[in-house]
Image (cartoon, rainbow, N blue to C red; front, side, top):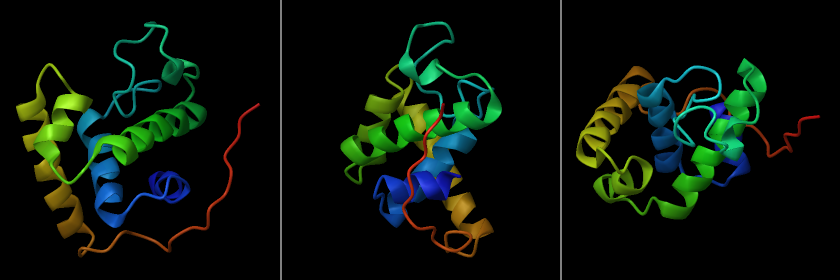
Length: 122
């Protein structure tokens, strides 16, 4: 699902690894899978679904949009945007996860690259 969202948002390979690492780092429950929108019940649009499937996609899309707009190759600078309270700790953890994910997958994004397709919810 992460790869599909990355394709739909035209993320580069580097940005796709970052998106996957963000998911693993944040590791939130349904509604907070990518840590988007602060605490639950904050009124953020990324919290509109709380079931596993819809919630995951909404969180992934918000995270992918943030990566696409604000990640310019400097993870520390991006950490200030993505996790303002703890940017150094966050960027160090995510950097470590990117390295580990790449090693686990022999430095190739897993699976075949999916075609772009719309994802919509009722």
